[in-house]
Amino acid sequence: MITLQQVAFRAGCSLATVSRVLNHTGPVSDEMVRKVRRAAAELGYRAAGGVSGMARRRPVIGVLIPSITNPVFASSLSTIQNRMLVAGHSVLIAQSDYDPAREADAVASLLNEQPTGLILTVCDAETSAALSAALPPTVLLSNLPTARFPAAITVDNRGAGREITAYLHSFGHRRILFVSGHFGASDRAKLRYLGYCDALEAMGTAPLAPFEIPFIDGYDGLDLSDVMARLQPSAIIASNDLLALGVIAALRREGLAVPQDVSVAGFDGIAIGRLTYPVLTTVEMPDVSMGAAAASLLLDMAENAAAPRHLQVAYRLRPGGTVQDIR
Image 1: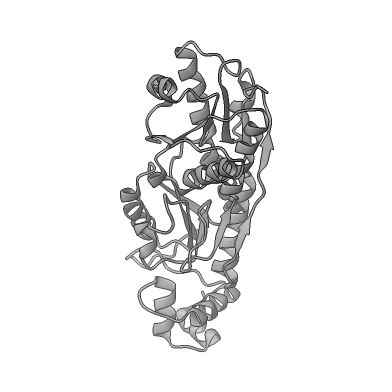
Image 2 (image 1 turned 60 degrees about the horizontal axis):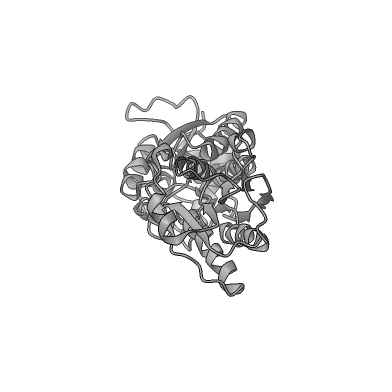
């Protein structure tokens, strides 16, 4: 069995330094962290788990997502699990329910299991309390990288917001409403709205204030009667596809047909959007490939001491039947 002493000798440092690096218990330079992790990986060292000192059967990584029931995160999570299974890692899962206050506790629970590394989707990477702690190798999934956490797998949400808005504008829509979960719970939704604003302002059209609702409430009871009466939009962009389907149902309760009376578009490209009639117009996000990329990057960082990287994956506009040309 490989010992800490052998890792220390290989890395050219003290036993105490190796312990601090592998147990995340004290300050160590980034260069020394990379040396120790590389030495541990090359020797095949696996840390003991728990206070009993029993050797852990499998290394684990922790994953934090906003919601395990959202098909977007479920797709990424499935790919992460498959990739980690091949690499011999187990996966621990926590969810925040789109609540910034719950993120730090969720990450603390993951850290109790001494994970090899973390893959995190937080509400806002710039303000998240979960990212203030001392963390093992960490990859942000769908959040833009920060100075402290430069490893991230993202998609250009702002660009996607611009593209879908320009698409609706090209069909003659000028009063376009953006319906979203609260921006404080999702920086991805906020970036999509900013892209919407970019596109309309570039075309000389004033953007409307967003209509924000809680992410975790059931969209089946969404009430758009007041905002529709006040703003009378010809088109609605929803910040995700589940919400777009809720918007369509809410419009039908108001006696409005989609797309004959109001056009609707979303983001994500979930499978259920292709099963509805008419098929949902959406921006298809690469959730499966993003999950695979996040898992591969984390393994490279944790086991090979690779430098953190920011990778951006392409999205695709998928026209459907829920947008009508009104020119």
